[in-house]
Image (cartoon, rainbow, N blue to C red; front, side, top):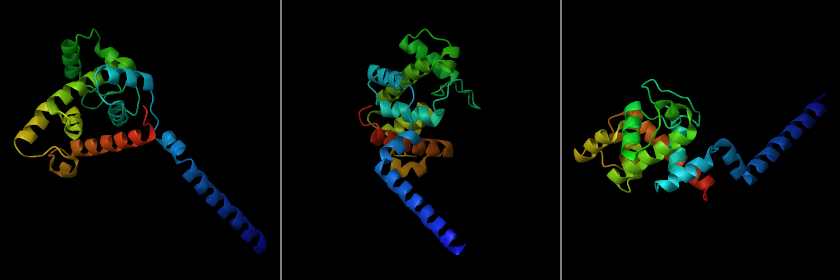
Length: 189
């Protein structure tokens, strides 16, 4: 009986060691399984159209909705990129898009296109400061501009604790985590 248990433990140990070796060898495969990117073509095309990084678009989508269409937040944000209706209407007017809020809510291609356009708009306002762009996507560009101009926050990731909104601090950290993961896992997006 004891020999049988020892033999069973050895087999289990070998299986665990084998699994660990497989995971280490195929870590990219595991990473892509854990951090998939859906709608890659739509993301790539929209990112290219508006000169934004596709990894950033994908990271925002992952953080906002985990690639699920038809999502609506408690505050009323719509679709995969969780765009507020007022913002969606403003984007449609500024970019001359002929879309409905239902399109933003349920059509991934529309949500991604509008989200990429909005990211470009934020990049024009905040320049190369990707962290401030992400914060503005969550808290709004007016709020982030006031934090920066009033000296509340310097716009850097390492001083994110100075951001007055806990939700925005958490959001920026999450987006930047996914952004870095996607850059590592999908270098040639």
